[in-house]
Amino acid sequence: MADVAEHTTQQPSASTGRPNIVFILADDLGYTDIAPYGSEVSTPSLSSLAEQGLSFTNYHTAANCAPARAMLLTGVDSHLAGVPNIPEMLAPQQRVHANYQGVLGDDVVTVATLLEDAGYHTYMAGKWHLGMEPRKQPNQRGFQRSVAMMDSGADHWEQRPYLSLYDQANWFADGERFTLPKDFYSSRFLVDKMMEFIDSNLRDGKPFFAYLPFMAVHSPVQAPQKFIDHYMDVYDSGWDVLRQRRMERAAALGIVPPDTPMVRMATTGDWDALSVEDRRYQAKRMAVYAGMIEAMDFHIGRLIDFLKQRGQYDNTIFIFTSDNGSEASGPADPRTLPGRLVPENLGYNVDYDTLGLRGSYGTIGPSFASASASPLAYYKFYAGEGGVRVPLIIAGKPLAGQQRLTRAFAWATDISPTILSMTGVAQPGQRYAGRPVQPITGRDLTPLIKGEAKRVYGPDDSVGYELTDHGVLFQGDYKLVVNQPPVGDGQWRLFNIVNDPGETVDLSASKALRFQRMLSRYEQYRRDNKVVPVPQGYAQIKQLFSNTLLQSRDGILVFLLTLLLLLPFYVAYRMKRISRP
Image (cartoon, rainbow, N blue to C red; front, side):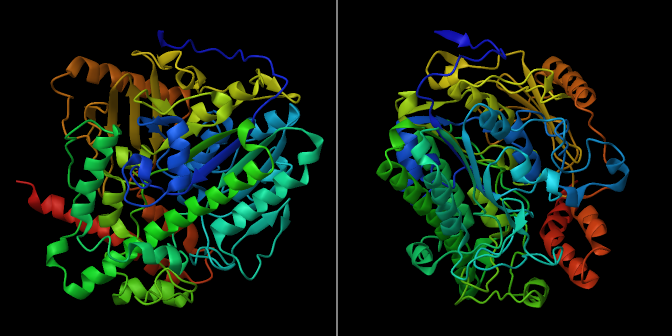
């Protein structure tokens, strides 16, 4: 068996019975949020897929949503794909560059376009966030049928925005504005639409590509009561206990090494210092989050049952992952005046009794987000493992696989070339449909899936990533990383993320030569991918405030929201400064 698969753009020819592809994308799901990765949350549908497929323990993605979605759908680095960051956080000085618009570029081809041109039916139901202009919408980027949430998120129970940034919740179907049904719940609705799309063309015998980017578990955290009830007593011991238990279960499952050490994030609160009432409220925040995960899994199960009933299951390959790691935004206590003000002015409540239900606004905050990412450090928007390492499961009878885990490194741009390989569709050349296009740079993961290779990236191959000067370079088992303030300190560090996924032992001094070489490789990555540094004084939340204040319907609300999001991170930053000798 080869240790490293050769990187090639050549793909096998199409077979007579090409498989269907169901690509399921969760939103803001933490590394150990599902049962196959160590969670206490019941996810039988995903557990079943993991039992018959390959689970990746060292798969990485972008630290926020739109860049990840661009890489997943194109196989091209987020900077070259036109989405180096979400548009809401781009600085004006960066927007003068063509590749810094925050929407999918015209010089990249989506996997949906390639599959459609190869005779596949292509469907999408879920969150898009890659551009709302007519030529940027899903129906113009390869999807024959689509129903799409165009924004960064929205309410899960009704058609209304979740931030004062948006005047309305922008839903589109096949390129036209769309009104949601009155009985809407996001996970149920998206699966219903996907089943409708698939059913509409089954008679012609063509295979399909179904892209199902759930809105779960993006804020506002909401779930049906019957799922919340399953977890009402589960989180009474708090976030530190949960983080430890998750690590132990993940180790027992082989997801992380035994006795993996962890750091404790400065943004994690003191559970023991809370009152009984405060603990009760915090525990329910996490119970709603767990219920939302289980609800998503339940509706994935409905889709699987539908495919079995239609005789399609045996010819379908499933891919499941998340766009980025845990979301830590939100106040430590939403019931305080600053915590209530913005949700209540948008018509939401944060009351204990209705938390998670229609009209409520839920988050889990940075403390439970740290448990969600256990045993990893950091979370969404940061380059620590908790922000960029997420579950990846690839399964299905056409793969003829058996239950396996792999610690081989994999990256978001690998998904598209893997789909193309599994369907026998060629990658695009230098030109496609009469125009120059960016080449796919991701690797085909099928040698791992088939057991023909132990890894597809060699020890000297490197993969870079950047988000607002948070930087990463992966090479072999090592990761070079810098996390900027307010949670990070702006210092480059080196970790062996196979043996130390919690990033607890900095190797920059003991492996100084590797450290310097990887720094040089990272600078090369920046040049090759046209990375534009942020202007002096840049901060993500500060830029979000600046970009949205003028276009918002209520500047005061945006200001208050900014304070609400920034507060826990600012407090952690001040705590670190005070604790320094």
